[in-house]
Image (cartoon, rainbow, N blue to C red; front, side, top):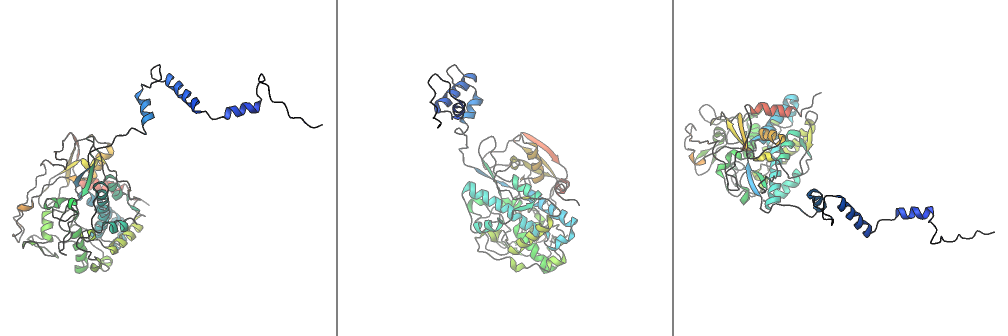
Length: 440
């Protein structure tokens, strides 16, 4: 006898188990969701009609549609390269002391030159992103540098803090390192500071102390090959230069000894000696002469040195930790901290520093302020220099480290907080770099 289909349940009969499970799996309708929301509103902080009065709960519901953004255009802030150069120099010397054979790959001026290309790359990237300006040769330069993914951690750590910040005033601040201006003179290229506002087309004499000395490092590298000594020789006791290249502008005698005497660059002497194997392989002709308005010419860009830099880092990773080149352009509030050198003379750079800032910084920002000295305040009066003095003895050079530093917002920085001073910056930098050195 064939099975007959069961009759459908009558209206008075309870549904079967399968029908109950089907009802439980049914997705809630719009009306169900609306009722559930009303019930949650009734149990939350609100009025009887369901209006939410708890601002925290309200902000959670509106966070995707309610945002705040600065309406003022970003401003540029010139920063000193001295802290970056010191970090790079300490890194190189620590590596070479640990493994002397590394000096056969690269001399110290070459290491400083190549490392500073990454600082220039980041500064140009910030300029393009926030001020919509580019310079000739920038895109080609950027594409070349993008092949590097990692750097020694101390250098990468510096770059990760060098970026745009928005202080409580609400106006974004974009740091800019001072790069050389476009100079057609082969002897002067890379030796005088420019301004990013006009694409480095004019000189900014007041910014000598802030500029990255690409041209001076290039000279030092060429001197190592020419004179087989590998060190940059400063002015002697009589103020006369050794192994210097005379350059002339408006007839005054202006050579490397003058720059050394003034101390107007972060570091152009006191390098570790270049090894015999390295200076024997340096090719001064590898400094390809780009067009006069090409930024790579001002940066003394050299693909041969960049390749050697890559080899140096490949070997150095066994002795120091490496970190990714920062991609985000966000920076740290430490770029707003003023650092003022103490125990400074015309012939000697400051070893100790005091620090002040207008905002209450985090511990990480305070440490970065002391290590990197983004805003090392030094006033330099170019017009007071007597270049006619052949012995460079009676130079009327004026420093005024305590002069109020006027920012590009058109107002003097307010000093509300003081960070503990650093009596010996070299000791602090060495301790910092050693933390990333690998021990066997």
